[in-house]
Amino acid sequence: MRVQLQTFGWLLVAFGSFVKSEANGTICSINSDGTESCYPRIFQATSEFQNILPGQHVPPELHIRIDMQTGQRQARLMPADSYSQPGIEVVEANVANNEQKVFAVAPQPAHKDQMQELVNLVLETGSRMVDRSVDKRLEQSLEELKDIVYDPKQAERLMDTPGAISALLSIGNPAHRPISWPPSTRRLASIIVGTMVQNNPELQSKAQRAGAVPALIHMLRDETDARTAGKHVFALSALTRGHALALEQFVQLDGLRIVSSINPLESTVFRGENESAKLDMRIVRFIEDVLNPEFNPRIPSTSASMISQFASVWCTTLSSRLTSSLEDVDSAQSERPTYERRLAYLHSLELLQQAYSDTCKVSSGFKDWIHNELARVKHVSDDEYNQALVNFYESNV
Image (cartoon, rainbow, N blue to C red; front, top):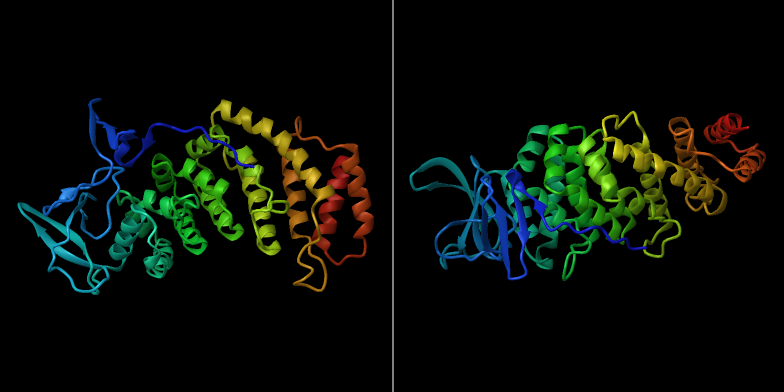
């Protein structure tokens, strides 16, 4: 089911400014002094370098450079005699009356700064229509960038590059028009976002202010590839876990209902039983984290009340899925059935009952199911599943 998100006219962008796209092809921004400035949505290139303003679409085949001191991107028309073969080079250049070091992006094969080259390619591809001719080059660059951002300093450097987080979210967007990047490319973009912000409150805050929460909700809602959807869940989890503002925004955007409405086991959108099962468990564990007060103790009372109300609904949903549609999966890959998903459901129910004892109630029918399930798996050599059933039965009878 497609759920309509509330559309915000104002989008948060770098440095705390707000931009609003207008129907006449312009972008208007609110300055720090409260005045409004407007400029064309599509960057108008000349033979001289000009600053690329927030939210502007940069046409392909331009000469782009980034001032590494200020993070400002500039672009101009590519001189006719400046290159003879495709590629991207990061070169040092001098700017008149400015001693700062500037890295210029030009279609050349040589490389001087691996990180900057990868970032420039992400910025270039994320700000224009999908170009399938660079699929492999972009995917290879994202693979390298994924490994680099495990270093917190490099993650911070990427996050602080103006437009980088927006470019990654654009690349990861399955609803990108007129066409989207392949699932493997979208997947890598979300992995990078999640890796950057994971366990890093400062970068979580920066991503949240850059609009990552609503973007990831949209991406997950519109995704048609189960494995890629799992990476969107990872990025959302990394962004909201332990971060009160990001979690509050997620809740206020109806994120809990949107995410919980995705049932990979019954959906006709996702293909592949194994990947759908993995996605199902990712969603269950993500919602479990959101509902766990220990992970998110500082959220405002309004959001806390919404979470408590949702806990009751999710408790009923988990019980229903356990008793009706959850299969003993992976029999094709194993000589005996596995109970990993059943365990995930039972553990989440147990946590819900402990944290929301007033709202998470199981029916007598579900208690009967637990009793019958214990008898059914009595001789199954899955001790963890047996013990989980025993624990749940004893706490509810």
